[in-house]
Length: 433
Image (cartoon, rainbow, N blue to C red):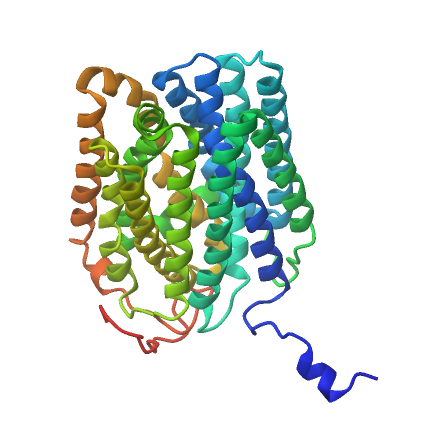
């Protein structure tokens, strides 16, 4: 028999950390550990194959273009089929494409078009995975501890980024990018196996009727009817594009020319990841009443890394800037997930997430593809200062939307009818309330 002492000694999970939540958190940790190293590896694989900044941008754009094209379909599919099956299938595609990429790089015969094709397959998998994963996570959490659950999830996910970026950068410098890409393929295989055990029995079955276009129209109405939602998505469509160009194209080039190569750049990205962990830890305690006001104010520092690369500052200063940016951006991330959780009905989560993702990445392929030509036309320094300025402008603009300033935290998620079950605001732990 189990004694009372044994029960006391047995570790207990918090009430909000159920089986699905735990599996999702563990799988996200594994995939982030591999993917953050693979981002560095892909850029340096192109450079080692004889490519330049424009080629790095083309490979980055090749991943994002199918992500843009298939996201809306992926969201509709994820709200129609069991979400965990969509996630597992997407992970399988990512595993195969990254494994093939690794073989090409290790063989020393990788061509630009081959790297673009395999990267595009990975982007296609991501297009179906992301809406399903976001809908699954949002539906796995209940009650007033939702924001804490999201903060802990993001802390685990971003914690993997610290190790992934630092270890990935070091591995690229020591043994080359091919082995980092192979490790990422293995991470997708492990995470997909874990996600196969998710339980979707709590999610009501969709009523028959309607088709894909009807689902997309319904998701659009849910998205377009909320000014705070589409306003912030428009903001990030621009901010993500310019920051993506700076990180994917200009960052590796500045690292190569001024900072010492892949190792220091990986270290800087690792400090960003450490900042996001610290920001998530902060958000386990801080519950700002006006969610989006607090979050949007914390987006302004996103301009700092581009400015630091434009100077360029020493690696120690760049690491400090990246850490601060990670802290503040994570405040936005947790606030944003909490707002979606409390305002969007469960049966529409993946479709709304798809519109969110679509808007957020729609301009990234264009920005990364134009990063090389922009550097040629205006110079790398001017291009980076332009990236920083655009982040500041669009973030200031979104504060003009009243709902962004005024949306308040609630204790209950929205019901199927689209109305909040409770309008009682949780007590803020300080600031901006």
